[in-house]
Image (cartoon, rainbow, N blue to C red; front, side, top):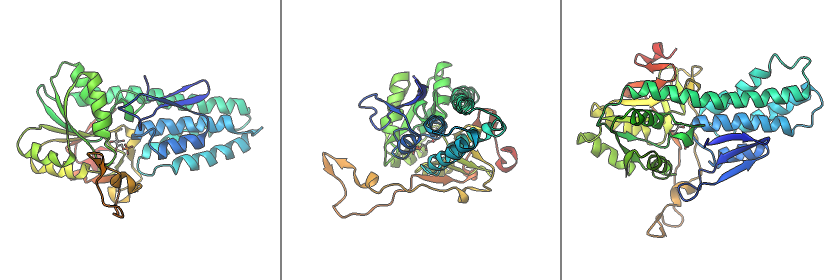
Length: 342
Ligand code: MRU
């Protein structure tokens, strides 16, 4: 089953807030509902929110009451602004929305409204289908980096749930597992929203891949004691110099791995690369509701005292010098990243 799919002129998403407790599908009919689903993380993961936003544009095309091309384009541009504003860090979102607008670019003159609507739906479907194929290719390239018997520390969720299907970093692990390599995954639980403990563990359970959940602050122990041979994660945006923005905690993990000479691999489609930004300091970092930090319960009781305040940056930037290689669908990029990414 795909995480994001189009059926009966509406968008269907696996509700990632409900997993692993229950597997529920939500059906969305408007682009505003898609923007809200991205904001509240019903759908999450850079490529998944890109594909969802593309289908959000398809919904906007169906919602529009325009009777000619020009007002329809205005409605689509307005929807594009709403969708792009839903989450700032993963560049795949803006990439997918802009790709839809670009695809219309030459078709507008003399096109019927229905023709334009169909073109938007077709392009969104193409983005989703390509995503699956791209993930499989990253899986094949990246699996060459993993050896039989490896223990891998993995951060956040980068599996089928974070994309349309298959996965980025977890897709590499899946491919290597299917090739017969015996792997063990130490799953960072990934505070505060626990994408590792909830989603990655749920996926690994289904794929039959050996894993154990660790709290984020245990990674240094496993790296220093030689119990992990690789570190794998995805990317929400890669700057032109190879700096990688990814889920909060990635930077500390990469630091500890680097200090112990453990290879660090980021797995990301080229749609996550933003050549317009010279380095990671320009990547906008989303700061989410402090309640995501404060709401944690332990033994049924809220952990933080009432009145406590918190900070909640959702991503951090790992400098390129800490990254061994970046796996893309076109192959593995090795340093110097500022030359080789281009
Ligand atoms: O806040 P999220 O859950 O959307 O963050 C997701 C990540 O940081 C992933 O690691 C990233 O999207 C790359 S993997 C597809």
